[in-house]
Amino acid sequence: MNWNFFYHIGIISLSLLLAALLRARIRFFQRYLIPSPIISGILLLVFYNFIAPFFGLKNDFLGEIVYHLLNISFIAMLLRVTPKQKKDGKGRRTLAANVTAVMGQYGLQCFFGLLFTAIMIATFKPDLFPAFGFTLPLGFELGPGQAYSIGIGWEKMGFRGGSSVGLTMAAIGFLIGSFGGVVLINQGLKRGWIGKESAQRINDRSVRTGFFSRLDTERPIGSYLSTDGESLDSLTYHVALVMATYLISWAFLSGLTVLLNLIGPLGSDLAKSLWGINFVFSSFCAIGVKLIMRAFKVETTIDNATCNRLSGLSVDLTVASSLGAISLVSIQGYWIPILVLTLLGMFITLVILPWYCSRIYDDHQFFRMLVIYGTATGTLPTGLALLRVVDKEFETPVATDYLYSVGIVFILAIPIILSVNLPAFSVTHNNPILFTFAILISAFYMLASFVSYLLIAKKRSFAKAGTLFYTE
Image (tube, rainbow, N blue to C red; front, top):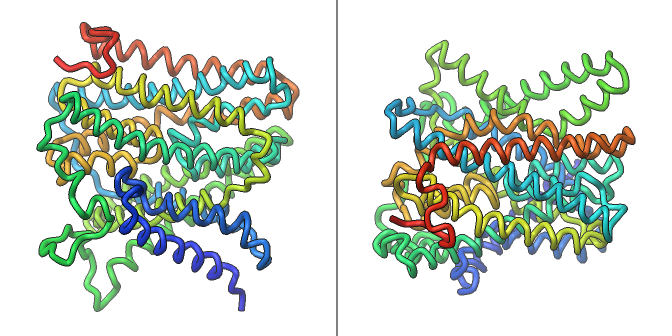
């Protein structure tokens, strides 16, 4: 019997339970709303780097689970049945503002990450791998799964410790998201950016401890049944649907790999890089499966809340595992470049992001900024978690409006995601112009987002330019 899988799953599960207990008991974690998966990941980081080697255990499996769970989380999220989008003028403007705000983060993080990498290569770190700059948007804007899957591909191209560097940036992003989110909320209360009644939930016991009290007679409903349990359990149905979609994604990408290998070495290199962005193909397969189900009028069997639970499970395990998968030995030579990108990321998300979000939106500026900030430092669940602190029941349209924009953002981000291997190819093909081309693509995204910002914000584009958060 092979127990390897259950060894590691058991260790991850134990760390999550211990982390939940620590969050419920230690006031520091409660004060800064540090998510339990982050605490769990720190415990796993210590265990796998200093204790596990004595038992012959390696953290390789954690990297693999991060890769697969990333794809599964995208499938679960995109299988959800979305309501029809609002078609009024205000709805379209809000949609355009959401897309512009998010794409602005892509452009800023990619461009300045690559630019500062070029500066470090030209000055004190000539042996720095050119793709290093992309670890900022991969870790902050996209998340640990993408940072690992693409980083592991870079390692084969010569980036020593690429996956660990990517996971480290993702971990730092989550911490900045948690600490920075609390700082922003407190500043919002102090400076009147949000009303006191809107932030009362931050003092709720369930928010601080992470558990609902025994005194809470009415608890939120996690999911609804879409099947009769006598035939097939509803959770079983949804898990089967997600995993079948993932199998379709694997089959499609495997077939594409065979076709690309027929082209020659160039096609083979492209095929390998595509496996690093498998979440893109998984997402399209999920959309395809949903469209087929809609055509046969069976999409009503999908329960969005259950999909949310499966996506939440995947994200929690991904966050914890991604931290545990970091090899401290692999990132020893990157401390200064990591610090440079971290400070850069903090300035982009904590200063530039609130500045332009407060001017581009007509309503609920602070709430909308929180969602964008959470996704720009962690993942979509991070942004929604920060929003839930000040908008407990999602009574405002902020969450729904943002979900409308996810699909458009995903499509618009594909070109920049496909360009992440250009700096690596500049090394493997000995062609520095590819690195420059990647910088130009990022600059185009940044410029396009800026033009869109000017068109949407209009007179407010530079109103009270010296003020971090603009309020009328």
